Image (cartoon, rainbow, N blue to C red; front, side, top):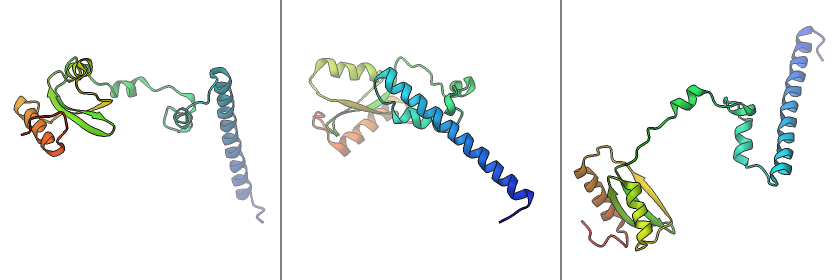
Length: 151
């Protein structure tokens, strides 16, 4: 079809690209077989999906220190928030606390309210009055069965 050098260069580049992708595919297949035999299970799709992305984590590369440090969050022993206790997809209790993790744990230990999960909302203003107002607004909107008194 074309006899000039430009077409030949394009064909050679295409051939090199195909070889590169085939090599990467074979490496992934080999790793997949290893994980199946050594671990006795299939690797998670999340693991394989992230290893094929070209985002710095793909191709088996580790994350850079700068990226890890940019994702840091400060450790807080206590956290002020409005919390929602959830059972079977329904909100069964709404509360607020200055030490929310401790308070949720107290609910679990007392066993008066059964729940399987929880959600947290941290109001923009952490003043006590604002948190109480947020809690009351959510109680009025969702009327959970374990919140006896309502606004």
